[in-house]
Amino acid sequence: MSSPIAHSLIGLALGLIRFLPHYRRWDELAGQFRALWRPLLFCVLLANAPDLDYFFGIFRGNVNYYHQTVTHTLIWIGVTALAIWAYGRFRERRASWLSLGLLLALLGSHLLADWLTVDCAPPIGLTLAWPFSDRLFNATWAFFPPPAKQTLAALWSLQNLRLVLVESAITLPLVIIVLWFKHGRAKH
Ligand SMILES: [Zn+2]
Image 1 (cartoon, rainbow, N blue to C red):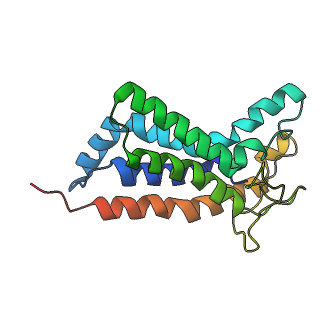
Image 2 (cartoon, protein in one colour):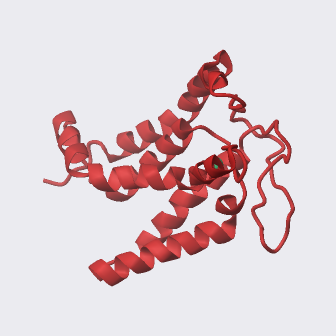
């Protein structure tokens, strides 16, 4: 699994692609961020949503108990995206196919990042095709480093500091590229 840093920055990049209009000046950009904070925050949260399974593990006394099971499958992200989309359509009557694409991309980005993360704790990988197959999927050339999360103290380890730096170095440029593409093309 990747940490919330990678998932959040990927979610932010996808949200900016969808919602940020083209802008010319930096103060315009700051204004857009202020205006768009709700949809952008929604994108960041949704890109992290599959890790809600940590929360259910608390009741079993082990946060990893359910981790990378049901919420890390293609069927779960499909059903969740459709449910949110149908709710938006019912309430606002303007949820488009593009919105459904964004929901799938946000939730799918989570599985993609986790698939690309070095997994050291068995079972290695994600059961993406559950309930149709129990096969585990993990990229052979996974490049996101594994997190240390065996204990609470391990969260503050040097290994995780390195993880934050590597993940930021890989995913922050995605946000910068989107901002760069949206700059200087505003129509007046
Ligand atoms: Zn995850």
